[in-house]
Image 1 (tube, rainbow, N blue to C red):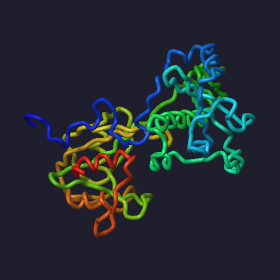
Image 2 (image 1 turned 120 degrees about the horizontal axis):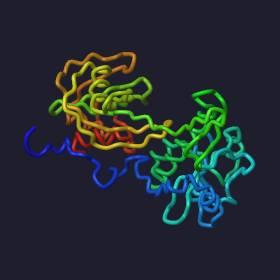
Image 3 (image 1 turned 90 degrees about the vertical axis):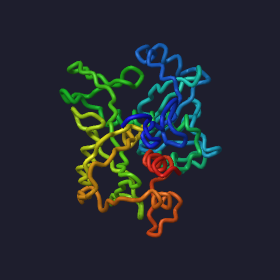
Length: 317
């Protein structure tokens, strides 16, 4: 296309993630240069300004008063039941760590009126935490999930140990080193003029339609993944792809890459193994969905999700 790109195909992200996009506003200086310096990390653990994010299984542990996510080291609950402690980075000069509490102690934590356990989706939807805290919590939860599922070497099967302040696991049996990985996922809104393509998974809440999505496969570009997933799920051929924004998604540790793709065909062939319905919706219909006024009661994902931002951008809402 000649000339300036239409507004629809201009990035949402410039100097930072769009306001309200969940988990995308982490602000820590990750200070990776400290990870291989155990003496520095140990010193940071003992400094009075250091704070900790606590997790129990898939839940963040907060102080009930003020819905506060940060603990001093002496105030961390159940110190005899801690697993990994990971260095996340620094807020200014103050270090931030993530601590895993044995999931078997969840009921004990819930019984403490001074504490609250909250799932990360609820944290993002409620928007009661500062965006920077939500970003750090997503970082910590994803990393702790990785450790919980990589206790044995993928090369020889021997137990691994934590290294580099939580950013590596080492196998002493075969000397293999294991590092955390992020799974890229494309999530795309297919556009045909004044219409967009939305699908419904049986896992969605009643009435909700959203963008199509799928994992990027090995040896595949992001753009090719967008076109492939669109065709596999809906039978629609895709053309030009523009990446609009991206969102860390700690379920368990993905990166949602939000894109628009121009449709080169319009006849839908739904993959019923993935979707229970897929339709074209006009821009006016999408606006009604966003406002909660669609005559069929159809809605779109909540505001913290990248799908919501793609849909709103299309609708001009």
